[in-house]
Length: 180
Length: 200
Image (cartoon, rainbow over all chains, first blue to last red; front, side):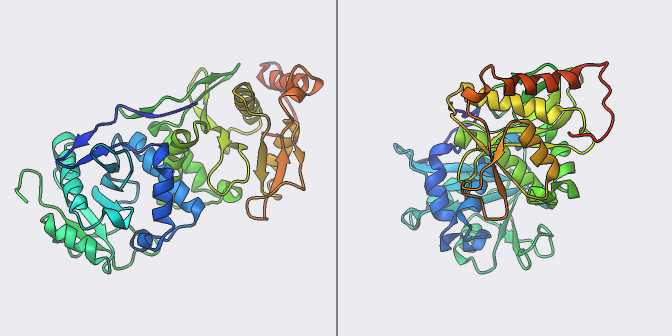
């Protein structure tokens, strides 16, 4: 029995495809989530916790009708990361989230290219007028990406009231229709 | 709408469908309550939402998963039943949860019996259920389904008991399967008004 997400969009950028997650992405996602690279997003996770994370990454699409896109290079189905609109219960605003899963995917501007496309999708297709990104204050690479995307620190804006989230930074994206 | 093509099962009183976004409040009510104490809960709102999303994603990753149990007539939900195998599970599990308030009417038995039959028809040659040893209602249901404690089987984390379900052959037109179906028919019979301790 193969069960797949239906009616999910595909976004193409110059170098990348953004597609819905599928079962074949699990191994790459798990390798990332159990590694130290996941330290700024609540990890490193146990294998079981990571597996469930992959499950809710897919389930988010059904719950909300959108979710994190899996980023691949054009011509490849190998997942490089998860980037896109993210809005689980307890979130204080709609988020553009990103994580690049393997170090080889870094340093090429892929996260920037994909996050821009994902934000444009949220604004143009989902009707979002604004978005935030929650970032760990020690996650310098993510902060740099947020700045590059034109985000500004939204000081005092609440973050989810959850264990381990104390001190999380909230970056506010330029509003829909405003050039970044 | 983004969706998964999850099979639908029908029984005499119930329809089992994949977990849908509009069913989430019912799931949350149970999983954020003390009712969830044997299922890793009670959970906070975020954990509950993420677990529900993972219930959905489980179908996409494994090709099988947990159904939402609906009343055939009213569409009201009563709980969930089906299969569950996150990364840490030694074997595929037949699992169930019944909302408080929907107990005592045999819905868990009827739904789980149908779910197990579906997986057996689709090539499974057995299954287990991992149950907290203090969860007496679930242990009783496992035994009514013909499952037996398997002390040799690997547990999830040492704090759970493993109940092994009868093989497909042991449920193929046997006294065991007749007994399960007779019990379900009793619950479904409008003239059957059981007294005493509700099972589930």
